[in-house]
Length: 386
Image (tube, rainbow, N blue to C red; front, top):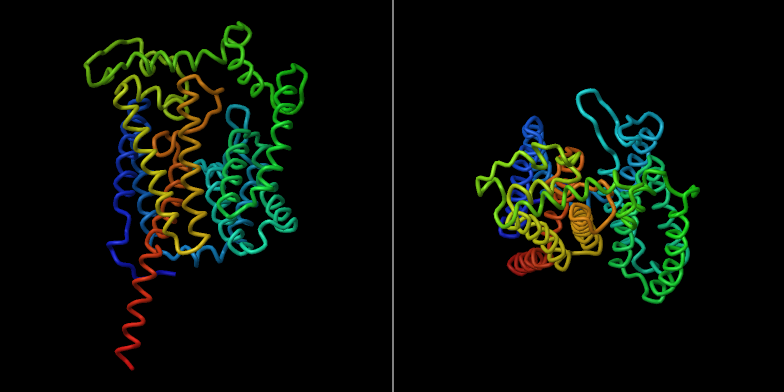
């Protein structure tokens, strides 16, 4: 479980990036809602502690419990389905009284860990119908439970992450080409159906968000597009260095004027743009990109396929969520309610991400270079003994 590692193999560069983005998150959450700043700080501290502990635990040993993790994930999602606490028309939380827990955020990490081991165990027969059918079934069960909350954004997010994972695992390009021939027409049919007023595929509020994005000039959807318009105005008003650094104390702001709801979560990027301007936004984008690149870089040195998939899976979650959140805040994607990793308020999301990063750090500790050094020392010791 716990192994002795050499400190020089620990990726302190990634830790510094995570600390920097987390500090920015604490500051921005405090600007959005002062009463949540201390909770965000506690979440960061707890997340860092969990990350360090997991980074010293052998991820190969943890992956032995893949079926226990998968089963626990299904149980948690079923509890949400049956007894979940509702907010904004969706039952996505389990309320423990002192804290509200959103299992879907942890589900993303569990699914990555599960398929990392599953695909490694089926590395030789991945492209067979039997293995592909099993993987689709194992994905479909949690995906259905998440979709029924309803939570379309995380359903699509996990589907995209799964596609990345199975590609990294070695899916045949012939199968990929065939899937594109099927998915593209289905996507066109899906979009053509959901824009119809009497469709039953998605909820009415989800359709309105899509329609507001496609037809922003239509007054029928003005309420749905107003938040994004105000978000763009807030970001633009920050100019180069933002109102906080320039000393501009306008009352008409995203925080003081309450022009954007959920500005501590879904629209935290608008707070960053308004208060710290173009420079602040660039800092966030660069840090998130750097974290994703470090995950990919460590995947290239992983000792096995499982470690490679874990690193690429975490990189995909961080990059996809970041891209989607910023696209929503800047008005180039429909409003989805996706948090910005390590920046938006949300203790479940924050701690889940730190759990994933702890696993990534352990993959880096057991890199191919580390294992070569261990083998070389073992050979040297054997020769000395002889």
